[in-house]
Length: 136
Image (cartoon, rainbow, N blue to C red; front, side):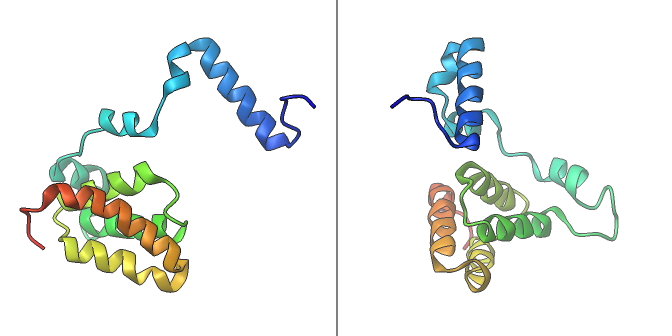
């Protein structure tokens, strides 16, 4: 039996991985956690400018938008580890309290299920555990 995947999606992914390795051999060791380190937390003012009240003065603020994003990521099963952790970091920077983050994720258990909620809480705790001295 050959090592070539038979599933069209698996074949497409293998081709993309082979192409990335051919262009940059270091990609073989790429980790999403490494990408996270390249994207620092944006200051609250930048988030407000890009996602908040600068564009739509009567619209949602950055904190609310990030809590909604976190809810959506949880509903998707909290499968995107980096996205969940980054969203939690950005929500904290935008003024969200730890309790608001936990409640946002917890509320999604009704829609996404307990496993998705638990996964999202574990990922959020990785970030919030680093900030023990901040407000609850």
